[in-house]
Image (cartoon, rainbow, N blue to C red; front, side, top):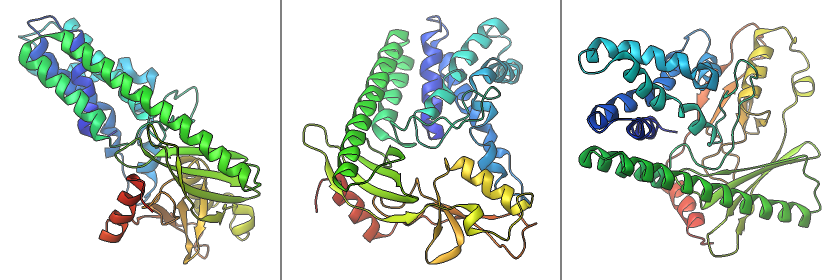
Length: 333
């Protein structure tokens, strides 16, 4: 999730464990602790553009790192708060603020290494977008009200409502996936894998991706709430295979290793951009849910296999794209 929402969840969690005299102080402590896991975004390298992708939502988001991460935050804050709280109380509040940071990210579709070092799988339950204003508003109102009223019961209510919203997101994802499977069957396809993920800022409009006979198919599905799901047919593209599409690149080369890293990040859903044969795109994400116009990709140069791939962004916020997105969101043709 976005940093603000992560901080709000941390603040609300810390409020639930605070004594009445600590609630306002706990709000700030929890907010800081909730942000701490995303410090991994600072891991970057000018020489290796994919280093940040590899380590974002990595070890700092692991469930096994939570006690240590919270301890580090407590040590930093102890310098400022040692006259107001015992270290044990401070650590308890940072632990509450930090503990769900990775779990919250796993609810999105980006991928989080929640079980590192036991597993390097990027877990993505894909039931909520990385930015969801409704979810954020629930936590914000709860944290502010608990702070003003000095009452942790309000924080518990906020967490309950946030959990209810996540449950609604899961229900929507199941409806979208069921509809996607119906569409796949009607096309006479046999899906080797199916992924549905929410589009930015909502749990109403979803992107469906499935693989059939080496091709990746994308569609937009408006799951609705009370109405029947609605399909916006999309595009298809051949899935990238390094042994077929880059036959002259050695497996031990820097370029081949970068492609493998990007493939792990993208859950293997890679394709060569048709208009740019030197660009590998992450098919999971697009500017519109029924197109292949990518949000990001890597630039590869087979002539220089010992050079790192370049990471590029292709975000399109044009008026036309916005109008098409909101038309689908509202169920229009």
